[in-house]
Length: 339
Image 1 (tube, one colour):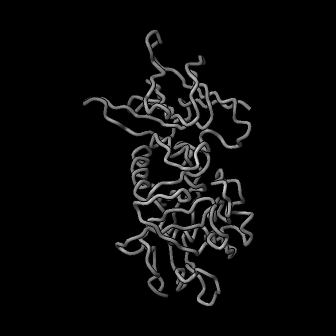
Image 2 (cartoon, helix red, strand yellow):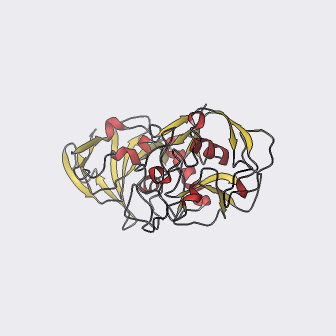
Image 3 (cartoon, rainbow, N blue to C red):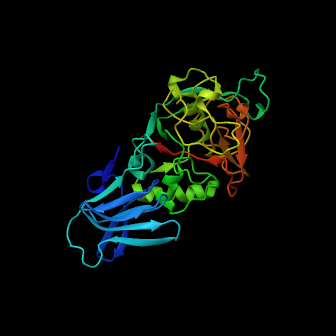
């Protein structure tokens, strides 16, 4: 089915950027992950290649577009689409006319900054036992002990791992090893690169996105207050919820079964960065909204990945990596505070 998205009525997020002392522009960015025709007032102006970023500019405090450009990923250059010499001045509509999406069930907006808030879940706060039971015989589980009670406030978390399309829309680059899959999770990004992405995303959206704390990540993976006590996120059968031992790389987000909160791929696909420094658990004393140690050597990664064993996908398993390092099986998902 042909899908047409009119940016002039679909505007949700934009950022202000100075262009002169007395004026400013705002820009809506959208990575197109299929070859797509761009129409201005119903007339085809260009065909945008998959992986390029459409940028529609608006005068400050208005919802009327004034300029359209495309960032071409292959050349690293911005291409002016509208207005050009001979184009009429005044208000206009921008249509994304995409006839090649039969193989995908999600919309273009699902991988853009437009849909971030509708693609997140409110996790209601509560208390849970974090880590692995001291008597459980799980190989490699020592780092997940001692089990201890954690209490968390409400927070929002993304249903999906951040995709290559979303990274492209924000950063105009794709560092992933497993390319040519814009709906696959972005990979091969360091913790420090993630911080750059989040800073830029927060400027674009005027929100405060961040990485989850390790305690938030595990609570969400367990299903929060809806938890059924599974070893994997959403099941005791890893094959229903996670990609693992898959030598062909990562997979498009959201293909497996979601967990009790409606979160996908928290067991397998790519391991996920957390905000905490990695260290042994502090002990069995209850803690409230823990953020980990003040400093350290490694940053926490969670969730297992598509190259690893099923045991590595247990929701309590922990790992760590230097914040400057990147790996083709490590990505992340976003969290936002619930005020």
